[in-house]
Length: 364
Image (cartoon, rainbow, N blue to C red; front, top):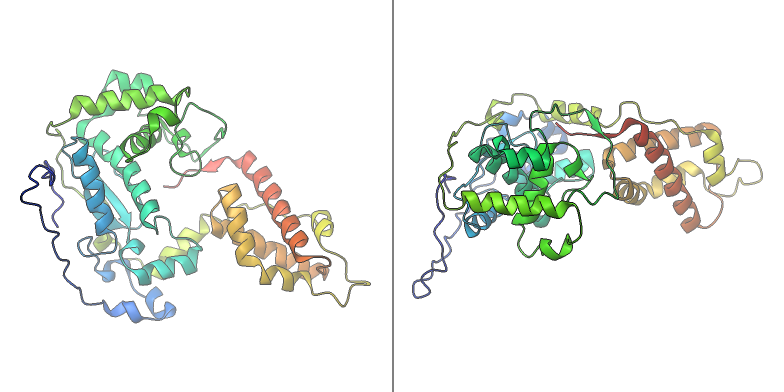
């Protein structure tokens, strides 16, 4: 499928001649699909030779294009694989992380990072709608308009390394995790656009009485002003396409992991002793190390969900906790449910106190 700018045919206009779905050609599996993890990590990203056409993500891209067409937006954002999600400034296109191209790469991502961002249909579409907001903004230069600046702020404000979200604020829509609309005016617009674009989002009733309603109405007005018009920016330039990235997968994951481990908080012995017990008189109980290793995955998942921190960060914190429990020779005494709950509470408090000082990291 060629991703071109222009109107998409409306398949509902002629019921007598319904368009038949185009059969998808079966593609031969790449040689790395059956590789072991060690073998796969030795591949360079450029050697994966991935294309959006025929990949696992193509149906979601097609769905995004249909949603844009249904709203009268004559832009089909160019889409390509890269190292991560992003929409380059000034370019009406979307870069998608390569690991979404194939189930084998998604399994590797899960193993290395404990989650796959955009790994389900709903998650992928949610991110695509957000990035489409940037693409539409770039294609029609919307951020240059006075109403855009008055509503969302200055597009030229420098992105901070971190931001301090206000979870209870009603001045921003809620779409992607982490209250991402609060990160920057451009993200505020993209998040508002994504809510506006999402089918059956019922934003008029959901955001009634919110300060964010004014932003949604402005987006609605802006989209009406560009409906059925040709975008002035039609460049097909691609930024950091996968074919140009020569680092190995091993190096790629080494660099990504390093983002989530710098400056993590320390655990104090008094906190550990509130959950686990000293070895004397409890030698028949399993060690705290055994307990934590047994429940590591479930604790990581739950704490990551409630703190909105990356699972890899939480896993590193759990590793620190296990190491200290081993040094103190602590024991896990008491019901499993209570110990898990108290461990998760301790982790949550520690990480939230830490991130409250550091603020939330903005992914690049």
